[in-house]
Length: 122
Image (cartoon, rainbow, N blue to C red; front, side, top):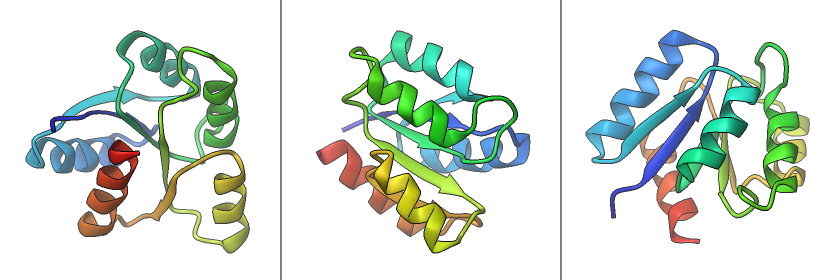
C-alpha cells in the first residue's frame, strides 16, 4: 500500500533525509515546516501517518498533536514522533499525547519504516 506521509519538521536537512527515505519506500511525502502548517495540510490531504518533530518554532510537536486529536477531521491520523529529544520523559509525554510511536534522531531507517508500517496498519 502506498501511504501519504506528512513530515512535520523545521529542519530542511531532516525534511530532505526523511523525504528521501519515504519516497525510496514507495510512499508519498508531504511536508509541513511547523505545527500550524501541519494542521492545515493534515486537514486538506488526510495523510495516512504524520511524522512529527517535537522542537519547532511557534507551536511545538506536542501542541500540534493535541490540536490534531481535538479536530474531528484529523483525530484518526496516527502520529509518529521523530525527535532528537531522547529522554524517557519526552517519550512518555509523546505517547500520552496519543502518538503511536517515538523514533529518535538520527533516524534508524528500519525503525522508522516499522513505525510507519505499524501506524498505517492500525
